[in-house]
Image 1 (cartoon, helix red, strand yellow):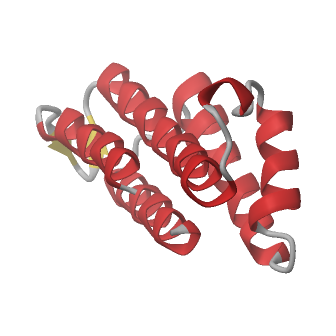
Image 2 (cartoon, rainbow, N blue to C red; image 1 turned 180 degrees about the vertical axis):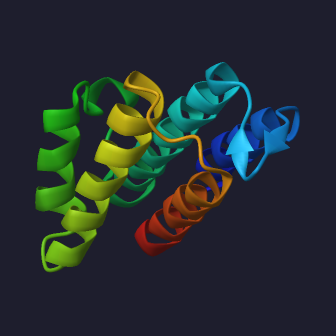
Length: 125
């Protein structure tokens, strides 16, 4: 969990340098970078679980979002459909809307998604 939280803290650090006006980040580029880093924190949490608890080697770790979904279904969320829904929500928010499309720049929403990412990481570990 240590490495995944390090990624998440890096995402928060990126945001500290961005000014906020009327609760909106004034520069979208670092916000997108923070979302990308937070998404990597989620993936790193899954990797850590697979390596430490399931004995995966680095070579066996998932290499696509579909492979991460399958690993979650098979090894982590086998009896927890809610965890799968949370992963899908975080994928859509952090990776697609936040990073890829740059659609989330409201400071409250950004904070909420980073909090949700942290909660997801703790649920896995």
